[in-house]
Image (cartoon, rainbow, N blue to C red; front, side, top):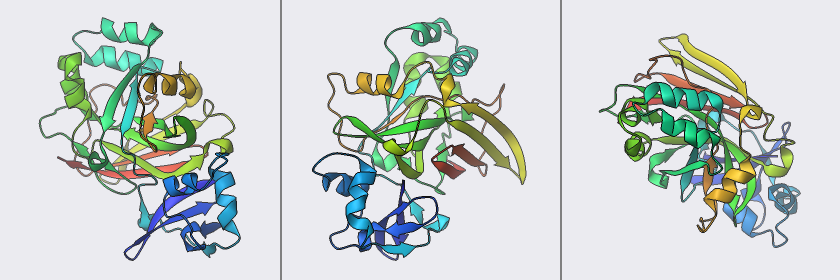
Length: 286
């Protein structure tokens, strides 16, 4: 099942959808209003869907309006993975004055895992993602993202790892500035329970960038192109590093606009991943 957070007046509600019907879990007696509250209510730690079963009989049916969607989870930390797809390795080499470093990462045992965003830098569906005012080459990076609870993968969502290719291309040590800034990450539109995804390494992914009423870029791929698994990336993130509950880890990008394509203010980015949904964000300059 899929879990959405929606606004109802001043309230934020947790809604679950089975694809046909949606239910407001918060409306049930002692019902949870966040994913972390739902997980904490499950003493057996069987998973999101099993925890939701305890509230479904008393939950009110609702309609989900895209305009009411907010961040499906509020991650205390967002991390990301780099060079996990061949196209990402090629793109990093293309932009960089020091391309060999990316070949080493792609082929090495240890993956690239880096800190991406704090809660204040992370936006949800339909909110603006940012491009830096001091950057000349900016792209979105659509990624399958995992949601962690007590160090385990409990769900999947869509991530947009906004990036300044011009800044990182100058020097790999500029990565934090190229990746971490206002509105640098978006997540949504929901969290799909881990048990509801048959194979996270076989999901169709598409991205479109709309500009002035036309499609300026579109591409499609499959998460099967990823050279590492979600479990492997998670194991490196949590190795000697206790991460807070509801931390989100993006698993790398397989779609990179060709050549010197760069985002502009007013563009609209749409990312769709099978079994999860579509994450839509307009672009602004920060």
